[in-house]
Image 1 (cartoon, helix red, strand yellow):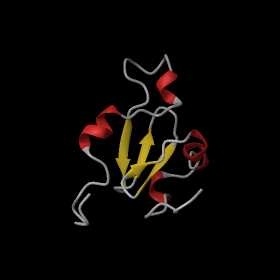
Image 2 (spheres, one colour):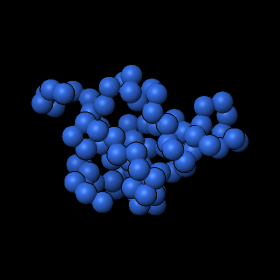
Image 3 (spheres, helix red, strand yellow):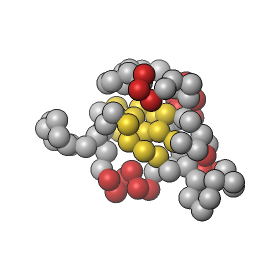
Length: 86
């Protein structure tokens, strides 16, 4: 990944296929539950579950326990950059 500040933290193609590991099992959220949105350029947010996953060094940290840790943190309050460890 380039060091250029305009480079996305994650490729659009990867963002399109990643799903929240919790919300992907929801059956009452339409045909494609668990879709993620990029927030602050370094967080993946699931509107279905509320879980938030950091992107560290270009790698999404999709561990349930990490996403759950930030569930009650408002998107505007997420630390930028994400903490290096949880």
